Image: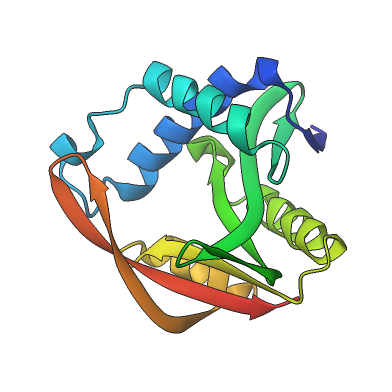
Length: 172
């Protein structure tokens, strides 16, 4: 059962959206109510990725993980925009998501290592990400990978629910 990482192409985007929504529901259902996760649908999330990728693909990289030809995870990295300014020394891990059945198989770790390598190869000397404060599982994953909270917070909307995000950072 071979895991392969590759750069995404346009034909991957609807499947990325489907996986993204399934991952969100599985990861957040323990602390967000069902109405917060009812939308977007997987199809709506796929259209979101088609739109986003169309205007960010020149300075962002979407990497997909496949196991036996089936999409099982992805990362999305790009420049860090702070207060509408881009810090040329900081890379942003915009997203990392896994098929719920893929958790615990090392795929997330491989995707993370690859994302950090990409950010380093772009000339960044540190990386940042945003994680939901109540997502203890993800926070433990990041902390095992050398990430730490840097003290910044913001609100994220999930349908009618507002939840807090924490900004994590780590050196590259």
